[in-house]
Image 1 (spheres, rainbow, N blue to C red):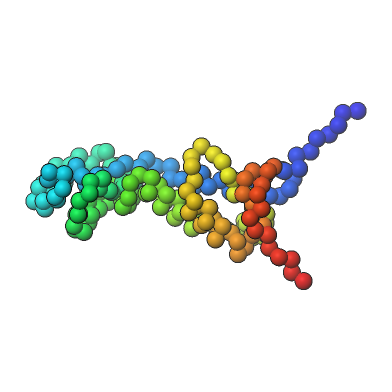
Image 2 (cartoon, rainbow, N blue to C red):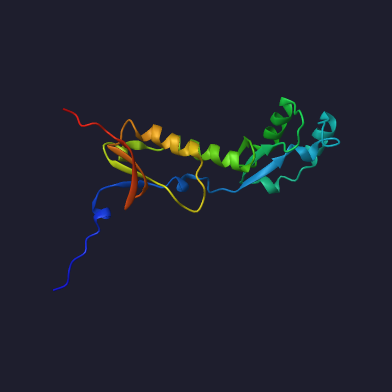
Length: 171
């Protein structure tokens, strides 16, 4: 007689959250203000406005734009407003920061918008490994989101987890 194998992990009812799936799917392109500085240090309003008028917007169409300045320069606030005013009609979103910072901000926003209804009074595993490195803030954010409603929170894989939180039994 052959022995029947059962998948205890699948039958456990543990829900898995893969934070990697919350990264933005759209391409992030960088707009570096450094490229528009006089002598690599100074932003001249007249020259900056002229350069923006000549800017080809195709590179930014349907993309997320990360606006940054990789040079150590003082950038006036109106410059960011001009960039947003120019790019907002063609891109998906304009955000301040380098590509990684913008990606992480968008990841956190998506985590904050998770509908937690499916996780109420359930055991949840936050997946611990994948293709992309997950920032620490994401683990903090998902824990803050789940702790008030989950039965338990674990880190890792359903077959090998690290306990993070377990709701106290009511009396």
